[in-house]
Image 1 (cartoon, rainbow, N blue to C red):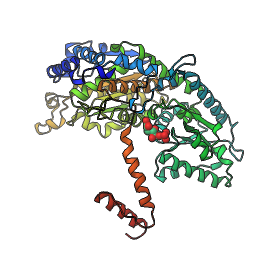
Image 2: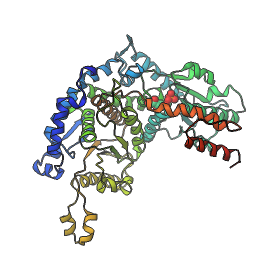
Image 3: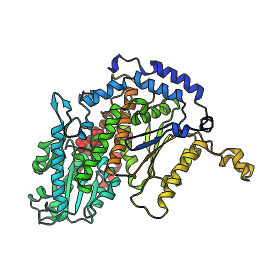
Image 4: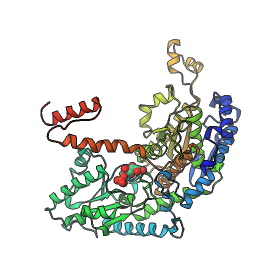
Length: 548
Ligand code: G6Q
């Protein structure tokens, strides 16, 4: 499919966009709004419960037409169909990419290698629900007969960021009798702090690892097992009551001492960063209960269907993706700020960092040739209004163009006095200030002395999207995550990337495996690294042995 397409920069729409950008790139948002008083209502899209206002982007109707043409010329329709059909679109790992199957309804059929995967997906979900109910009701007891009050998820990367983000996002729906903790870092501090106030007899560990070989997770799991056994009288049988696993690797799970009856499986066609709604979401389900978890999956599915069926001009993920490409490639914007005005979404930017950057941080195309243009931008952000008191300065007056995604909910789960109005007023105000700024004349008219005027000028013309949803329900979270998943997919299609591999994380892992024994050796072995690495290892080793 992709191989028969002309290279990206040779596509007619690309060339037209280059010319178009030269014409309209410097146009001011203020002028665009002045020309068309309906712009703020026209350049919006409402679908599956999400209202997207994209009017504050540096685009005209022609820009949209050309971007949509670029999507068509990039074969987006074919790529979407290929993903939903279960084709092995993760070329470098020869795998299907079917996170959409994880949220497909029971009666759907999705085939991988001639085999319908949907029944197995639902069998795992049912098993998770049964287990979650038992823990939540107190039917599942610890080794000494005590009720489970603490659940610690041990996992990293895709086996951590989704669960922790979803737990924080849906905390309002969580059972407050269960304390959820997340341990990811191999830094012993993470484990020590997460468990320092917990009772082993009341603590259940979920070891979440697709491969069950990840160094950090297996190191933390071993420490957890030792901690658990030490607190429970050292009986090996205790492990079965205090450890469950989420993995695709039954052999390794059994080797660790976890009863495979308490293992929740998934499949190689679920990428780590796309696994939140697989069994990797077990901690989320324990926290919010199976019904809420299923409602979240319903939200994901609603967005999947929207993405699969809506015409591209009315397709939320496609529009978001095309706008990202527009700024990344035609304005050389290197980053995107994601700014949720919702405290419960405090880990959402961190989650998106992995989703976006591990997916599209690539330097070669699917065919292995160097990319011709910049690919995945750096995603970052913090909840508003906190960010306003720190880095917004640079977004407003710095020299970098930083497109922003503002996200908010019309109602709050914690409607406290004036708080929500103040919160939303701030978000609307920030988008307004970014777009329209404040001219020198306006600043002067306020009586500002001349020497201070340049410092107080806001150039404006800084683009943003605003996403408004009604309330941060489980379904809303599912829709929001799927929106970004499919936006990332669409960007990857335009750039002709394999958005589903992550070879860039390998080299460091391999080098660490070589250095670990060097650090652990009682006497320093001969070192064969570069002089900087050698010196660092030598220094650490000497300090550790008290010789420094
Ligand atoms: C995500 C990556 C990566 C992965 C972790 C954990 O897409 O593949 O972040 O999730 O390395 O891997 P395991 O689940 O196998 O421990």
